[in-house]
Each structure stands twice: as structure tokens, then as C-alpha cells.
Image (cartoon, rainbow, N blue to C red; front, side, top):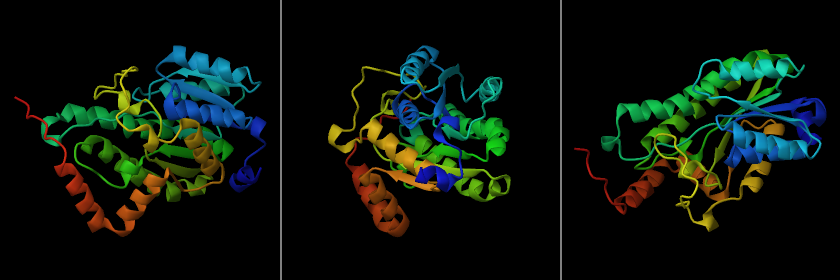
Length: 280
């Protein structure tokens, strides 16, 4: 495959992809996409029952898949998963730090605990995943993948915790390009726009509300499978960043090349939203 040659990786059947936050949404979509390409997948999330169902689905296609209960906010969980794979003689070639959620609301109405909770998963969870899988990635000269967001390029009113976390992991990815090179490990940042997923059904405390409607209209959301295909292709081609969806590409272009105009547009948009009541 052209993509694998770009990354200097072995044949698909010899590759293992470890994915955090793999129980639903983009994580599950990426698991299906890499499995479709014939690669072993190691699924990590807190909801082990959902992981087992997905792993069984993928194994039915003849491709190895394993489910591992793990929480990126807990020291040692990812290291344990890497150890479980090592006991099978397997080391991950690709580690995707996908686990995350979004804390939203006006800054004046949020507590420090809200920001800490956001960063514990979206930022420190990524760093923890890196630290606990890096030795394995060195052995395979693999690739570390960070799930960012178009929100890592521009910030809008009412979402400062989430956008701060995504700006932070984009900065981490930029640093890792140089820091990991000598170890033979590479890094890809994924910056999606609106994709079908559960993230907008998760509250500020990380609780999932499965029956809540998605506030983003269907015509603006990319199907999960389509997004996962674009992401996987970019990862395997060794791209430093993969921006997914047309509106995300436009937003990133504007943020980079027309920052003052972009800020004006975002300010105009924020005036049309109703202010949140202050906490008492």
C-alpha cells in the first residue's frame, strides 16, 4: 500500500492500532476503518461492554480485535493495555489519543473544577497516553496520533474550556514533530469539524445522554465512516495534520490567513446568542 510505504510500516496484518475512546463515535469509526484495512485493533475505553460488542463485530470479519477497559485520566491504565498486548507478542504501531469530551458555557459561569476536568481528559489524558505508549512506539518506529479539533485553531464564545484544551494539544503536536524524530516516532494531529459522534451528547461532567438530539444540523455533519476513512488515509500517509470536513478547512484557512476578519465574524456570531444567567 502507498500509505504504508510512506510510513515505512510492515504489511497490514502485522500492524496494531491502539485507540482510546473507542467505544463510540470517531473512535469506533476509526476502529472499523483500520480493521477494514486488515489491521489488528486494540480498543480502549471505560465502557467495556460496548467495546466487547465492537471487538466481536470486528473479529467476525477475520481481523484480530481486543477490548481493554481503560481510563486516560488514570495513571497506568494505558501502560497496562500496552502490557496486555506485549503478553501476546504485539506492540502498537499506531496509537490514537482519541478520548475526549467538551465542557461548554461562559467562563464567568464555570468553576475552576470545570476547567480542570476538561484538561484532565483532553490534555493530560493525551500526555498520559503518550508517556505510557512511547516505549512501544519506539520499538515499532510508529506514529502517535492526537485527536484535535477545528476548535484548536479558533475559539468562540461559550466554549473556552474545550477550545483551550484543543489549542493545547495542537501545540503539543507541533512540539512532538521535532522531539520524537530522533526516536523514529512521528506524530499526526487530526483537526475535524462537525462529525457524527457522541461528543455533543456528553455533559460538562462527562456524562453521556444517548437520546439527546445533536444540536448540529445533519447537513453540516460528516458521516463518521467517511471522516474515519479520511483520517486513516492521512495517518497512514504520514501527514502532520489532517483537517476533516470542508467547513473545517475553510475555518482553519481563515484563522491562519485572515485572523482579524475571523475574529470579527466570531464576535458578530456571539452577539446573536442569548447570554447565560450568572451563578448565584
